[in-house]
Image 1 (cartoon, rainbow, N blue to C red):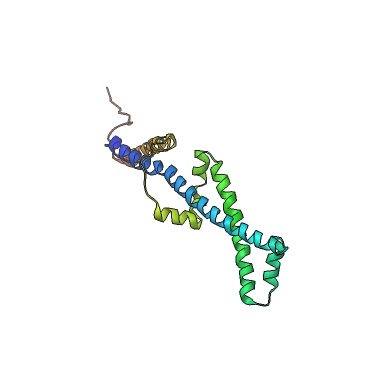
Image 2: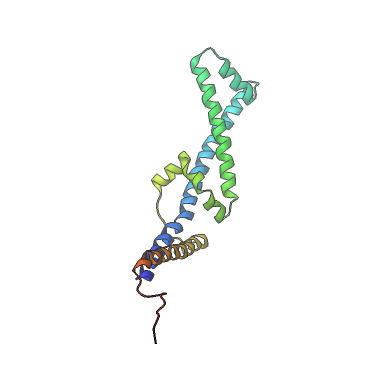
Length: 171
Protein backbone atom coordinates (compact mmCIF):
# COMPACT_ATOMS: atom_id res chain seq x y z
CA UNK A 1 0.00 0.00 0.00
CA UNK A 2 2.87 2.34 0.85
CA UNK A 3 4.42 1.81 -2.59
CA UNK A 4 1.12 2.53 -4.33
CA UNK A 5 0.63 5.82 -2.46
CA UNK A 6 4.28 6.78 -3.00
CA UNK A 7 3.97 5.92 -6.70
CA UNK A 8 0.90 8.13 -7.04
CA UNK A 9 2.78 10.95 -5.29
CA UNK A 10 5.74 10.42 -7.60
CA UNK A 11 3.55 10.59 -10.69
CA UNK A 12 1.77 13.72 -9.40
CA UNK A 13 5.03 15.56 -8.73
CA UNK A 14 6.54 14.31 -11.99
CA UNK A 15 3.58 15.73 -13.89
CA UNK A 16 3.80 19.03 -12.03
CA UNK A 17 7.56 19.54 -12.40
CA UNK A 18 7.56 18.44 -16.03
CA UNK A 19 5.43 21.51 -16.79
CA UNK A 20 8.04 23.98 -15.57
CA UNK A 21 10.10 24.08 -18.81
CA UNK A 22 6.92 24.86 -20.77
CA UNK A 23 5.95 27.60 -18.32
CA UNK A 24 9.47 29.05 -18.55
CA UNK A 25 9.28 28.98 -22.35
CA UNK A 26 5.87 30.69 -22.42
CA UNK A 27 7.08 33.26 -19.88
CA UNK A 28 10.20 33.96 -21.93
CA UNK A 29 8.09 34.50 -25.05
CA UNK A 30 5.83 36.99 -23.24
CA UNK A 31 8.82 38.74 -21.71
CA UNK A 32 10.54 38.97 -25.10
CA UNK A 33 7.39 40.48 -26.61
CA UNK A 34 7.18 43.08 -23.85
CA UNK A 35 10.86 43.97 -24.27
CA UNK A 36 10.42 44.31 -28.04
CA UNK A 37 7.49 46.69 -27.64
CA UNK A 38 9.25 48.77 -25.00
CA UNK A 39 12.33 48.91 -27.25
CA UNK A 40 10.20 50.42 -30.05
CA UNK A 41 8.80 53.06 -27.67
CA UNK A 42 12.26 53.85 -26.27
CA UNK A 43 13.91 54.14 -29.68
CA UNK A 44 11.08 56.30 -30.99
CA UNK A 45 11.38 58.66 -28.00
CA UNK A 46 15.16 58.84 -28.39
CA UNK A 47 14.84 59.63 -32.13
CA UNK A 48 12.29 62.37 -31.44
CA UNK A 49 14.51 63.83 -28.72
CA UNK A 50 17.55 63.73 -31.01
CA UNK A 51 15.59 65.42 -33.81
CA UNK A 52 14.87 68.20 -31.32
CA UNK A 53 18.55 68.47 -30.43
CA UNK A 54 18.14 66.72 -27.06
CA UNK A 55 19.22 63.51 -25.45
CA UNK A 56 16.74 61.36 -23.51
CA UNK A 57 17.48 62.93 -20.12
CA UNK A 58 17.19 66.48 -21.42
CA UNK A 59 13.88 65.65 -23.14
CA UNK A 60 12.52 64.13 -19.93
CA UNK A 61 13.62 67.17 -17.95
CA UNK A 62 11.78 69.39 -20.43
CA UNK A 63 8.62 67.33 -19.94
CA UNK A 64 8.96 67.43 -16.15
CA UNK A 65 9.68 71.18 -16.08
CA UNK A 66 6.52 71.97 -18.03
CA UNK A 67 3.74 73.88 -16.30
CA UNK A 68 1.28 71.77 -18.29
CA UNK A 69 0.14 68.91 -16.02
CA UNK A 70 -0.40 66.65 -19.03
CA UNK A 71 3.16 67.09 -20.32
CA UNK A 72 4.64 66.69 -16.83
CA UNK A 73 2.62 63.49 -16.43
CA UNK A 74 3.92 62.19 -19.76
CA UNK A 75 7.47 62.82 -18.58
CA UNK A 76 6.83 60.79 -15.44
CA UNK A 77 5.17 58.05 -17.49
CA UNK A 78 8.05 57.88 -19.97
CA UNK A 79 10.59 57.69 -17.12
CA UNK A 80 8.69 54.70 -15.71
CA UNK A 81 8.56 53.13 -19.19
CA UNK A 82 12.34 53.44 -19.62
CA UNK A 83 12.95 51.95 -16.17
CA UNK A 84 10.62 49.03 -16.96
CA UNK A 85 12.37 48.50 -20.29
CA UNK A 86 15.78 48.37 -18.58
CA UNK A 87 14.52 45.98 -15.88
CA UNK A 88 12.75 43.62 -18.30
CA UNK A 89 15.69 43.64 -20.72
CA UNK A 90 18.02 42.62 -17.89
CA UNK A 91 15.60 39.89 -16.77
CA UNK A 92 15.32 38.53 -20.33
CA UNK A 93 19.11 38.44 -20.70
CA UNK A 94 19.38 36.65 -17.36
CA UNK A 95 16.76 34.04 -18.30
CA UNK A 96 18.22 33.42 -21.75
CA UNK A 97 21.64 32.86 -20.21
CA UNK A 98 20.39 30.59 -17.39
CA UNK A 99 20.50 26.83 -17.33
CA UNK A 100 17.56 24.60 -16.37
CA UNK A 101 18.40 24.58 -12.65
CA UNK A 102 18.98 28.34 -12.52
CA UNK A 103 15.58 28.93 -14.17
CA UNK A 104 13.89 26.71 -11.58
CA UNK A 105 15.61 28.58 -8.75
CA UNK A 106 14.34 31.88 -10.21
CA UNK A 107 10.72 30.72 -10.41
CA UNK A 108 9.54 32.95 -7.53
CA UNK A 109 10.86 35.99 -9.38
CA UNK A 110 8.77 35.02 -12.42
CA UNK A 111 5.62 34.71 -10.35
CA UNK A 112 6.08 38.08 -8.67
CA UNK A 113 5.82 40.00 -11.93
CA UNK A 114 2.84 41.09 -13.96
CA UNK A 115 4.15 39.06 -16.89
CA UNK A 116 4.52 35.96 -14.70
CA UNK A 117 0.95 36.29 -13.46
CA UNK A 118 -0.41 36.73 -16.98
CA UNK A 119 1.64 33.76 -18.17
CA UNK A 120 0.06 31.58 -15.48
CA UNK A 121 -3.42 32.85 -16.41
CA UNK A 122 -2.92 31.89 -20.06
CA UNK A 123 -0.72 28.83 -19.43
CA UNK A 124 -1.33 25.78 -21.59
CA UNK A 125 0.12 22.51 -20.27
CA UNK A 126 2.35 20.58 -22.63
CA UNK A 127 3.78 17.08 -22.80
CA UNK A 128 7.49 17.28 -21.96
CA UNK A 129 9.35 15.93 -24.97
CA UNK A 130 12.54 17.88 -24.41
CA UNK A 131 15.38 16.43 -22.39
CA UNK A 132 14.85 19.19 -19.83
CA UNK A 133 11.17 18.29 -19.44
CA UNK A 134 11.97 14.60 -19.10
CA UNK A 135 14.63 15.32 -16.47
CA UNK A 136 12.22 17.48 -14.47
CA UNK A 137 9.60 14.73 -14.70
CA UNK A 138 12.10 12.08 -13.56
CA UNK A 139 13.32 14.23 -10.70
CA UNK A 140 9.75 14.99 -9.70
CA UNK A 141 8.84 11.32 -9.68
CA UNK A 142 11.80 10.35 -7.51
CA UNK A 143 11.24 13.24 -5.10
CA UNK A 144 7.48 12.63 -4.88
CA UNK A 145 7.95 8.90 -4.38
CA UNK A 146 10.52 9.34 -1.62
CA UNK A 147 8.59 12.06 0.23
CA UNK A 148 5.27 10.21 0.22
CA UNK A 149 6.92 6.90 1.02
CA UNK A 150 8.57 8.48 4.04
CA UNK A 151 5.35 10.16 5.16
CA UNK A 152 3.34 6.94 4.89
CA UNK A 153 6.02 5.01 6.76
CA UNK A 154 6.12 7.66 9.49
CA UNK A 155 2.32 7.80 9.81
CA UNK A 156 2.13 4.00 10.04
CA UNK A 157 4.70 3.67 12.84
CA UNK A 158 2.19 3.69 15.72
CA UNK A 159 0.18 0.93 14.08
CA UNK A 160 2.98 -1.58 13.54
CA UNK A 161 2.79 -4.76 15.53
CA UNK A 162 5.65 -6.34 17.34
CA UNK A 163 8.41 -5.19 15.02
CA UNK A 164 11.46 -4.09 16.84
CA UNK A 165 10.27 -5.33 20.22
CA UNK A 166 12.47 -7.66 22.25
CA UNK A 167 10.79 -10.76 23.50
CA UNK A 168 12.00 -12.14 26.75
CA UNK A 169 11.47 -15.83 27.37
CA UNK A 170 12.09 -17.54 30.63
CA UNK A 171 13.49 -20.92 30.56
